[in-house]
Image (cartoon, rainbow, N blue to C red; front, top):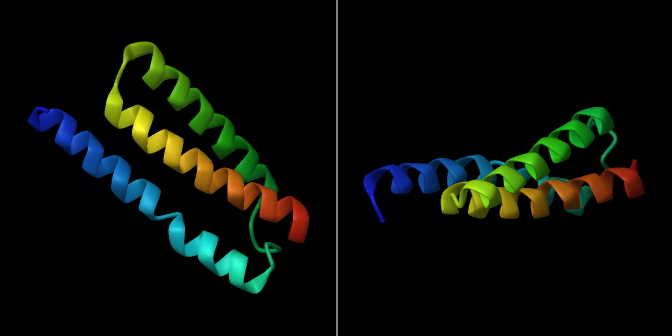
Length: 84
């Protein structure tokens, strides 16, 4: 693994980790009223496209970060649709 990949993995880790507090807060409160459905639909679509891009170019940091981000954002999207 080279320095550029390490930077990519760290960047992906930080941006993905940023979702964890929101997921926890939404899960505990069972309320997603303050989350924008439009933003999460567009964001989740973008994450899917980044994941496809990462798979096409074989970029492990992009793939790894977007798989985890998709899981977290998808979970928030489900909670938004369920709790509002």
